[in-house]
Image (cartoon, rainbow over all chains, first blue to last red; front, side, top):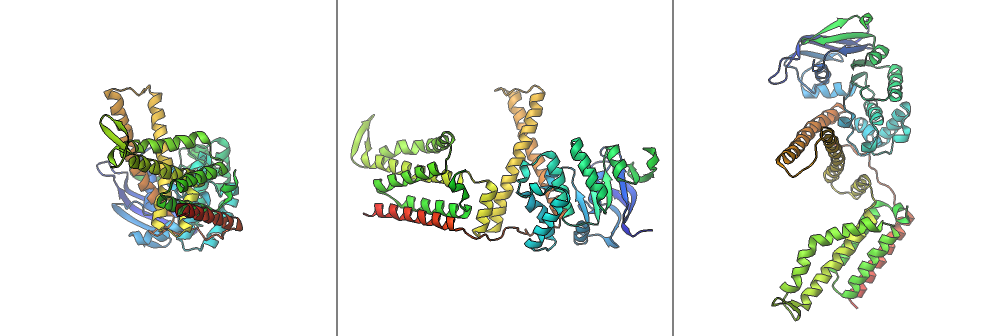
Length: 223
Length: 241
């Protein structure tokens, strides 16, 4: 069996004044795996991804990531560098004036020099076929361009795991196909949240359903 | 695109600043008129569109109109005209003209040299001029937020219109607008939290890295700076004949 990347056990989480979204939930991710997380709106799928990278602290349970127990903010800084989270709304992610600066933000934070960062930006944009956008102002990009640039910004950190939160939302067919093509060619392990059945079927190999605060394996043949 | 657009934004910023400093110090009518003429010349060279530029200048003058009208009556001196028992002094009139000339010359120069600059380029130029990093980032974040707020506002307004909202001067309209701005505030706060979360996901720990590297100044920029220096000297000579 391949190397264990994430192991979440006994997770419990409730937003203030609401019913718990996670109650004794467990989840594992191994290298090379591509897992779909499905569930109703508000079931806690996004919360799960945010817990994995420490943006949200669970009220119960433990998080093991990349071979170590992660508990405080300091532990998660390394996790975030190795597990790239793609946010639901690209506008939340793109905050630098130009595309090149935004893609360079992560590598620079990881201690790369500006020259190295520039090389990574060039390579990442080229990999996604976005070279032409490098100098563009981020807030003038189209919805599809924004999605692909925000993916480039995550990939520029060279993560081992990709956490995709509704990545195919509001994309036209051509951009959606392009995104699927890019994702299937990537080597990273992935956790994919989506309501788009075709998108899930083409990218993931295993699926879990989040319902009633628990994660349960679901046969892929149930598609 | 005019030739001015190819000049390094840093040089344009410094030239504008230098021009403003010199003009503020002028007091002689020929020097002030020359300054205004220089600004007009720069505006023509920059090929600014006359309509919007004049509107912006008019907005500035409208802002000062009360001061300008009251000055002749409030500055003591030789009365030139008498209006309802109050004399307008020639000193006051001159003071008003002086302010009008200075402000329009500087504003026109700003519009000519910096008006066509993308806010992002302006921010980068400020950073290259070694302005405090925090100030530059605040400026760039503001630019970005204005665009986001604008888009959010239009989305919400369109959604309101789609449900038949027409702005009237009644309680319902004002209350709805109040909700709109309140909602924008709440959403901005949420968004700023999500943005910070996204930044932390990419390794942000409170210190901003910078891609901005020093850029050499071209010969063209030196020539432009020399031209401005000469113009400034001429203004100073006109001031002290």
